[in-house]
Amino acid sequence: MRAVKRLNFAVLALVALFVAAALGSWTKDEPESVPAAGRMSTAGGAGQAAPAFTLKDKNGHVYTVGGPREKALIVNFWASWCGPCQEEAPDLNALALKYKNVLDIYGVNVTSQDYKPNAERFIRKYMLAFPALFDEKGTVFDLYKGQVFPTNVLIDKNGVITEVVLGMLTAEELEKKIIALTGS
Image 1 (spheres, rainbow, N blue to C red):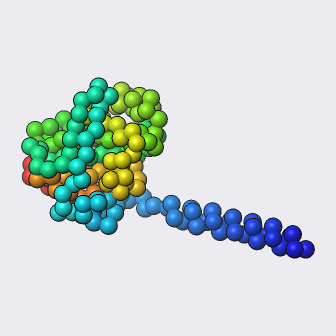
Image 2 (image 1 turned 90 degrees about the horizontal axis):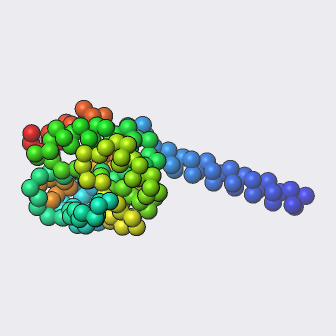
Image 3 (image 1 turned 30 degrees about the horizontal axis):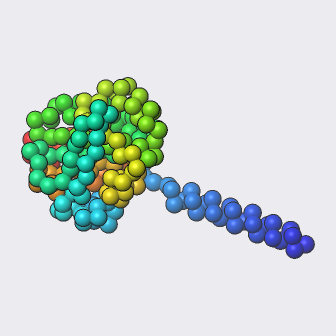
């Protein structure tokens, strides 16, 4: 009888654990736009300096973030297996080309949570019109307290985070944010 009670308790505990995990991982369908304060940046939140980092693309070119820049910047954290990242890539391409005079986009593949050959295939498939950088150890994603894919960090010309968008936006929504960011 004791063994049956222990087994029932163990099964009940497992069910409760799965329910808690499912509820904990549930997210809204709408992307969440938040100031960086409590969720993303070790440097603070919206209105504070973006944490500095340097990463390379597949050809070894070095890209640096941190401090004032000539153009506003979107840092797009992505993974090749992420469905919303795949949907967002063509829109990011079009917007990168349209706003190339006032905006840079750096696509940061969080390679620590991806498979680099798949990421390289993703870059070829979507013919990314902006630098695709590799965060091989996940240190930059961790620095920005990344939680979901895609995550877009909007940074103004002064190197200050203006907004962090968790999840995918439509092209129209993203373009509105770009216009506000760049003043275009």
